[in-house]
Amino acid sequence: MYGVERAVQTVYMTRSDATDRLLDRFRTELRDLAPAAVWAHGSLGGGDYREGISDLDLIVVLEGPIGVSTLWRVARLHARLRAEPLVAKLHCSYLTHDTVDGAERRHLTWAHQQLFKRTVTPVTRRELHTFGLVLEGEPPGSLLPPVTDGELAEFVVRDQRDFWRRQVDRTDNWTQDVWVDLGLVTYARATATLKDGRLITKREALDLLPGLGAPAELVADVRRRRYEEPGAPAQEWTAPVQEWTARRADLTRGYLGPAIDRLVAAYE
Image (cartoon, rainbow, N blue to C red; front, top):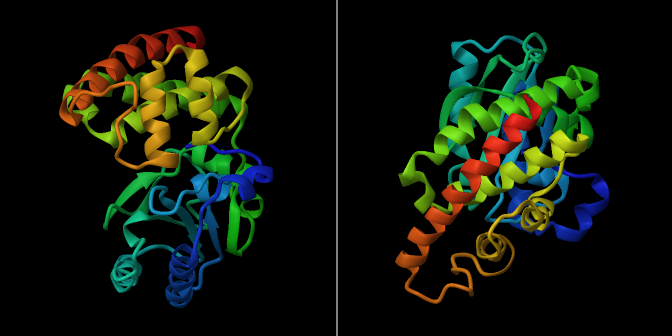
């Protein structure tokens, strides 16, 4: 979700030939579709990309409507990339000139190794305007309608209330690294955006969380897996990994539930 100004890009990014090779191969495969623009957002656009950990979040804008023929060609395109080492991290939504407006529209998307439809949210749209990385064609400001501060704030509150707060009550989610990481980081980012309109990186979110009352061992666990030692439990917890996973789930749910409730109540 969120990001920062371009000034931090050279500080925190870890990107090797594997990332560049996949992006170059993707753009080459796209040529038959004659895209008007190819953009990167998320960690790659915002400067906090960690190769092998971060997703490669892309947007492609096509000239014409997406019919059955185009859908088939997009599926074939991604199938041809399957031998690339980082291909599982590549996520891309396909827009057209006629469908770029409206954050409620659902667009053809390749993610998690399959095609489906999903929205391009106000957060993603603001990211693209703020620090979108142009890989090809027109810049986001030329094609994508702007997102107002009110639209952004409304989405962030709704996302915390209607999605994340409900997920907190689903206990099975929180034994998984991805839910712990995204739940904590998204909450911190939402707090920053609602307070002063900022879009912040995952690293900034982790720096912010202790001041928001998050348990130090949770923050250390996420930071260590993203930036230091993937897979290692927090040093503060020396019991077997299975016990730490269960304790971490309880800590995360116990923190996020009340924290989200307070945040939503303050801005509704």
